View 1: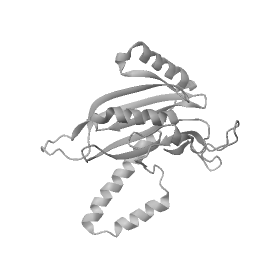
View 2: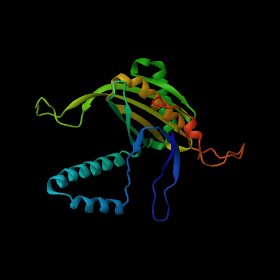
View 3: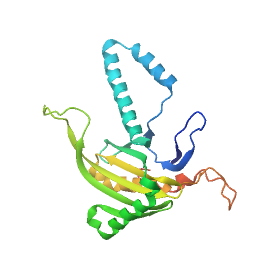
View 4: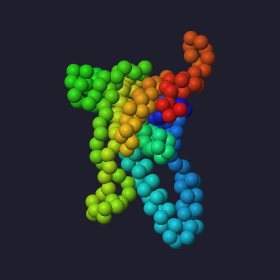
Length: 236
């Protein structure tokens, strides 16, 4: 796993500061949710140099990317990564991993999590179960649902194309932040739900509010590899 940090908001007088750290599994490519202006201008110049037909297609892709980034940032998503892994039949399966924060009213994040974890423990039929993580108390929720899928319906239906996905969600909080941290995994590979659940839990176990790159007070040795060692990716 590759360690990464989520940052707080920033301003001219107050630069962004990391508020928690997490591991990114092998096989996942992070989307740039805050691309520099220079890079966007470069992409636009390259797009304008394409032939007319290709320019129209590339423009649609760029608009889709911009809309997706805007939507993700509006939901306080700190990280979005797309996974590509080989399946047993030689095909490639995909998944999407996101880490976001949800503000808790009155800084009551720990109470909210404790209440939901208690509900999960008392009533397992809710689809949730309590979760003890190194960074604090949380819960795991998972479901299979039908949702809008990219592409056009080959049957020629006027409605949007739909598909089934497995969705797993881990929510946790700690004294290190007033927000609730939400780690979510979504994949259309329903037959690999157990595998993706393990990856989701593995990422959740790497969550920490202590900078893993700083020397440990006890050993005075750097912990740069702590996130990688916290979980073994099932895909190898």
